[in-house]
Length: 84
View: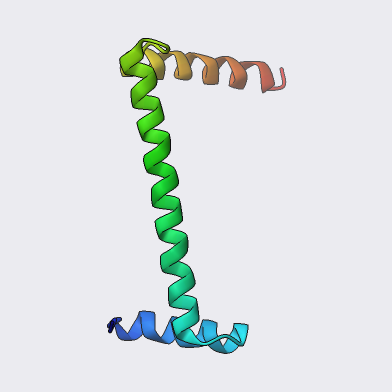
């Protein structure tokens, strides 16, 4: 497989390879593996959360209600932390 990068990305990759003492192809392979691992973990989390919602184990909350509650709590924290 052949991968092409912009000159900027290529320069960063080459610098990282020099700094780490590793070959650039190893760094790219590690990055891709890490990306796929993270993607699989995210997919697993999303599937689990979806299953929880569908089964009724957790109840969704309205976004506007949540953010209003968050704003009130933040205002209260700021009010309580301000020296009087």
